[in-house]
Image (cartoon, one colour):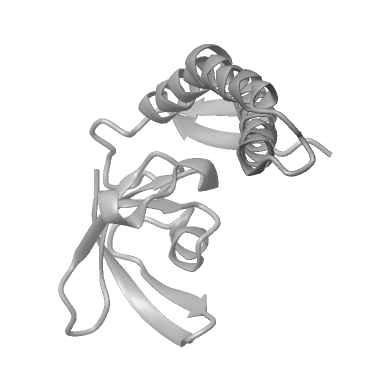
Length: 157
């Protein structure tokens, strides 16, 4: 079963740059460390060799993960100027308000690109899942492990 990974153009580009860096620079650095460690004598008791082998495994695992992620990526377009009747979708910039709390603004992105500190929440998060398909002015019930609450969509775009 192949999962679609939703990414913005910028997110796709960042992951592609990371993959390129791992393929070229990082692989060569790890290979050099392994070579140096192998020259260091007895491999059975060589901690540097073990550390380099572990790093190599991590790098190769990350390369494989990124290759799959990028191969199954669907580029999302962030909404320019959505109309009042437009439904919220991946790529939408949304402002919500919960009760008396301050309003929060974020962009809905795929899970691989989610970063709440940068204002990017996953379409698979409780809020993201709940507001997808809704419109400006809707009050939406959000179910989280911490409880259920309502948010009002006060701006889209």
